[in-house]
Image (tube, rainbow over all chains, first blue to last red; front, side, top):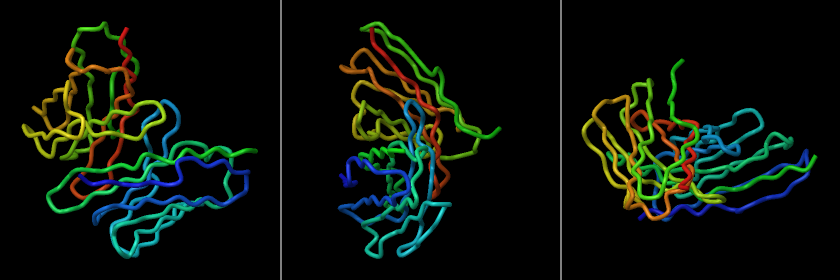
Length: 112
Length: 111
């Protein structure tokens, strides 16, 4: 089946630093989604990407859909303590396939 | 308010009992999903449904069952055949080719 490799698995950074995480796939995706999950809660959508090469921002967050359609990255600039959480990427291969595949997540810790 | 609602938030079950987790959405989404999350782990797909009265097994369907009698509802039954049912269960819904939205999750504990 489809595999999504998300890295890094965890990150420990100082407040104010920039962060980057990425996902790579063994197959082509038509949609990439990035989520953030707080402890004990459901994931919340951060950014959705629909076209190869697309670069989209949401406040301090920027995500890009890779040209090969097999990868995506998420950047967080000027991190703050409330950025703490688990970040997940998800991809869909398109067509009539509704299945969403998730990465294993990146645990982000921000030290004040 | 539009959204996706899971209930209950916390659920306790005795070993050997079946239990059903509720998921309702009023977003008019065609597709609905159930995921399982274990501590420190990612999301694993249990079942998904693209349309009413149709559903497909995900990667870890054994010991679970679902139904999709209405567009708005996609209940998940955790049966006694599921060997390690204690987990955090997440339901999601999605319009065709668009973003998926999650409920707040149900934490199931087997006692």
